[in-house]
Length: 83
Image (cartoon, rainbow, N blue to C red):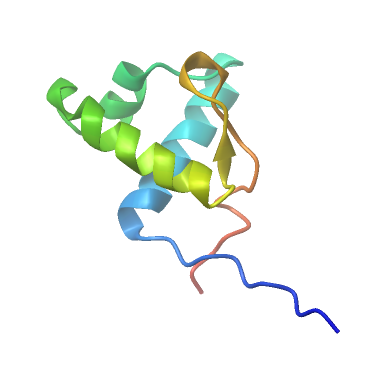
């Protein structure tokens, strides 16, 4: 009998990045740029590398997929509540 795996517990930063990606995608109708996401989460423009690493981790967890302007959320953070 196979057990259903629990979704991974995300850090506060990962949840903020996911929320920014979801909100901006909804507002714009397409994937936001890194600059738009950095502004939304309050990071400097020099933090692209850090944002990229977080997005790669979320992709490895199958929460987001794609890259660049084709980035999209597959498992919503709104369904991944920490409570």
